[in-house]
Each structure stands twice: as C-alpha cells, then as structure tokens.
Amino acid sequence: MKKKLVISEEVLQRFWDIKKIGNLPLKTVTGQSISVRNFGLWNRLQGPDYSGVQLEINELLFVGDVEFHWTTSDWEKHLHSRDEKYNKVILHVVWIHDQEVTTLDGNCIPILQLSDYFNEKDLQKMQHSVSSIFQSQIEERILKCEGNSIIQDDLRWKNTVEKQYEIVMFKRLKAKMDEITNLSKFYRNDWETLAFIYIGKYWVDNQNRLAVERLLQSVPISFVKRSPLKELLAYVWILGGFERIGTDLITSNQFDEQMKFLKNKFQIKSLDISWYYGKIRPQGWVQNRLIQYFVWLHGLDGQISDVLTDQTWRTQERFMMDSPYFSYLGSKLGLNVQQASKVIANAIIPLQLAYSQHKESHKIDFEIHLDCLRNLPAEDNRIVRKYSPFFGSANTAFHSQALTHQIHEFCREGRCSTCEIGKEICS
Image (cartoon, rainbow, N blue to C red; front, side, top):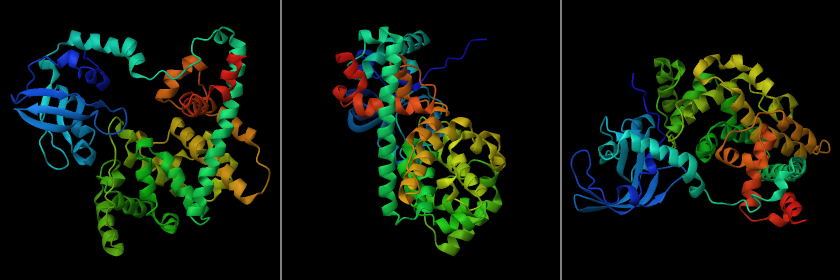
C-alpha cells in the first residue's frame, strides 16, 4: 500500500515564491489564466496566509489575500466560509482540489492546484528545506549572545540563565498583577466578575482571547451563578453566534428550544463577533473550550470567589480531581493536564497575587508562587521550541513562561546590558 503523504500547510506556502511559480503558465482548475504581479506578505498570525497579493485572473486585476490548504475541503473544515476575515481571499492554493468553496459573502474562490505543476518528490524536497535550512531564514535572529563561549561551561551557563529567569518571572508576575489591578478598577472592584472574565480569556486559544473577553463581559455574573448549565450555555451560544456543533448537549432539540425561549425572554441578539478557527484542531475550537469552561464553572456551585483565595486551585491535581464534572462533555472535550496548567499559570496564580495585594492580608511571598510554576508542566509554543536548545530545556511552566518573557522583553528589545546573561558574557 502506498504511504499517504502528510505535508504541513507551511510547506505548501513555500511554493508561493517567484523562484518556484513565477514563470509557470498558471491556471485555475477551471482553466482561467493566472499572472502574479505581487506575491504579497507572508502572515504568521491569524487570518489568510498571504496578504496584499496582486493577481491577474483572465487579465482582470485582483488585490487581496491568498490561503493555502492541503485539500480544498479543508476550507470548510477550518470554518473559513463562516469567517469574515477570509472575505478578501482572491485565490485558494491547494495540493488536491476536491470541492468548490465560498467566502462568508457567498463569493466563489478561484482554485490553484499545485499538483498540476509539481510532483511528490518536489513536495518532499520542499519539506526537507523548510525543516532544515529555510526555518533559520524566516525567523529573525534576535539572540545577540548566541555562540558565545560561556555556553561551554554548562554549570555556569545554567546558573546564569536560572538567575535571569528569576528576575524575568518576578517582572512578569508584577506586570500581570498591575494589569489585573487596573482591570479591577474598570470592574469597580467586582472581583468575581473579573475572575470570571479573566480565567475564561485564558481558557481559550490566544487568537480568540479578546473576542471571548468581549463575549463574557455581556454575561451577567448573577446569571452565571444561578442558572442551570444548559440555560447558561444557550445564553452564551446566542451571544456568540456559534454553530450548534460539539457535544450532544449542544445538538439536542431541547437545547434548540432553550435558545428560542431565551431569545424571546431576554431579547438577546448575537454580538456579531468574528471567531478564528484556522490552524486550530476541533477540540481546541473556541466553542468547545467555552463548553468546557462553563462546565467547570458549574462545578464550583456559584462559588467563583473561592478561586481567588483557595490555594489548592494552584495545583493541577485540584483541576483534574474535579474532572467528573466534565462527564457532560464526553472524552473528546474533557480537561487535560496541559490545559489545566495553562489556566493556572496564566490566570489563577496572577489573580490570587493581585487579590492578595488588594486585600493587603499579608506580605506577598513570590517564591511560593514561583514554586507552584516549577511544579506545572511547560507550555508548548513556537518560542519555547525554537529557543530552548540555546537557553536550556523548558521542562516546567516556570521555565517556559520565563523563556517567552525573556525573548519578548529582553532579547527582542536588545536589553543585553540589563540582562544577567548579557552582563556575564561582557564580564
């Protein structure tokens, strides 16, 4: 049996280059001629893969975005047809064309099938190029101390990095506390509402955080505390304008009737929020995370304020110990250790620190909170994967958060003179 190719979209994106397709007689799958006048800019954030592209299709000029997928049907799998961010896509580049697709506006999108111009050997060569050589070219080089002889002394290097990480994490926690303190003023010291929104924001992927914050701000905390789970989810589903996909709880006729009842009772209307689904697996889709979040809240029996003071919530064991509440969800959407740790590190610990400072109940011992982070598993993100070979393995949330903050706040800004690593090298 022939082995099925598994190629990432990033590999396909690398064919979008004047050296690869600039001189090819390109045509859409329907036979329309394509001439690329401007290849645009590669987008590594949310939204279409390339922006600012200029194409001539059948000698008509089009300006907009280009999106890449392995198959055309991935457009629907990623819910781009329901996302207004993809309304400006003027060309859909795929390896295999298997169905027609449209934008949210209902416009059909021209399709370019790369397999008409390249073969599997070309794909494999490009995949190898991306994984070995090209990656170093597309990432900006920001480590000015990389290659210094200090790394030859492992113990000295480890101690220096650890010392810098302590400083970095203190700064990060202080910054998070200041952020939450400012938010508490916005919410008029309603710390329950603040905790409800802040934790929910970090329960979802980072590209939907601002949208979730806006959504949760429209859900009264009193309604969260006293409403049955199905009624609460129906309320959120109306506000968010979500499709009814997910668990049996969401797809049931009873849930549909609940939504109709709430629409009539409260005159609720959708907030018309744009949700991002690209490059996210279905179990991580924002509506699935929100189901998970509200089931967790339901398990608190309305005692949201306990999260601000109960130190057991700083341990992943407490989150997982309460996992029977997630029987509403089924195994595919159940809470996992990685998700629980992310919420604890990014939301629970900073909230408890800020609330403790607000109450002035006792002197804050940052070291206790840092120890909590050292007992949580590391987050897996692009920065950690790229830079941990240089700084050292990131095995805990303390190290992954410190490394991420180090890159953003010190290395990118060129603050070598205020960095313990930089000072050690200069000495």
